[in-house]
Length: 191
Image (cartoon, rainbow, N blue to C red; front, side):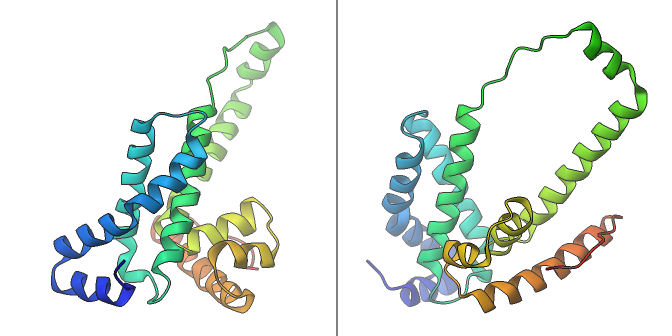
């Protein structure tokens, strides 16, 4: 197993060779994380697709990964993506049953428009959070979507609590800037 510094040096000389070496070194680990999570609901093809998505994210965010944190970062992305894959594979569309009362609710134009607007805004917000990269996206998601305690967030992303607070503050500022750049405003504090 190559040390991280050697991988980083190889990547700086040749991204293609370096990323290929990184992929070969971490493939077994990432596949094991994914397969362990989805084996009861997915196929090997599902696992391969998830593994590819993980490495794409790692390669895209590589320059943002702090030196010495590569293994932990890959593990965090692998676990998060594997859980997302598990949920995607286990959620089955439910048949829709329309009753008279439901039709009356659907007919209320304001309700449909408001629900659509909320869903659209939520999707924009999630997309912008994902654009922050890791570990910022995970920190924000755990804090604001899952109401996770600071110690749990710190443990999940492999950082100390003060570092998580600082990352959260900076990530929220970047999120505000991204949203404003796209014509949205964000109310409230960061934490």
